[in-house]
Amino acid sequence: GAVVSQHPSRVICKSGTSVKIECRSLDFQATTMFWYRQFPKQSLMLMATSNEGSKATYEQGVEKDKFLINHASLTLSTLTVTSAHPEDSSFYICSARPDTDEQYFGPGTRLTVT
Amino acid sequence: ILNVEQSPQSLHVQEGDSTNFTCGFPSSNFYALHWYRWETAKSPEALFVMTLNGDEKKKGRISATLNTKEGYSYLYIKGSQPEDSATYLCAFTPGGGNKLTFGTGTQLKVEL
Picture 1 (cartoon, helix red, strand yellow):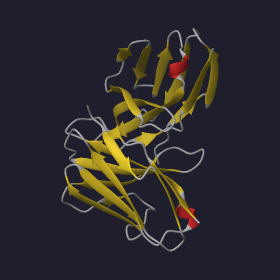
Picture 2 (spheres, rainbow over the protein chains, first blue to last red):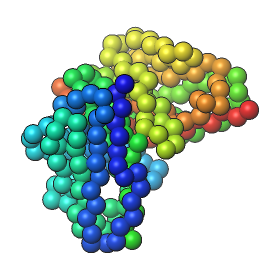
Picture 3 (cartoon, helix red, strand yellow):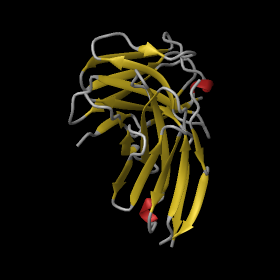
């Protein structure tokens, strides 16, 4: 139980284009979903928290107009990186939280912007 | 800014060795401490959530302890096996919130 999928696992895009990453909780309903990114040799850093049906809450320093988050249902959240640039190249990973203290993670998406 | 420190950064042990690593976190405004195991190309897997000072949790050969007064947690692996090779992450949740602040992890490699 508590499986979270993430798609795509790897994406390469050109500078200036937008990329959408999907995060799905497969066997539970997630009241809250979280988006993290990890740069090389650094820790997972929280980007934003989203609750189903409401606007995401972004961490300090994360541009909400660049990283669009939609949490349209209790099992799906999407992160769209708009007008991507090479500095956005990173590992993006989501987690989903049912009504407990635990977060269940997807396998992550490696984004490379050329 | 919350600081979560993990040590060592990496560790190589032989099959059958027992090992342990440390997670340091802020001792004030504590709510929970999480341990995850993260194998390459897979999702981080939740190992333990600990909330009470003095908590000890065990899952098979893996156990963890918690000291909230001094701000540290230890993860122990008894009789390491090659399948234990992974990065072990700890994450801290402060009181009143549900956000996780992660350490950089301890990368464990168990060799035959």
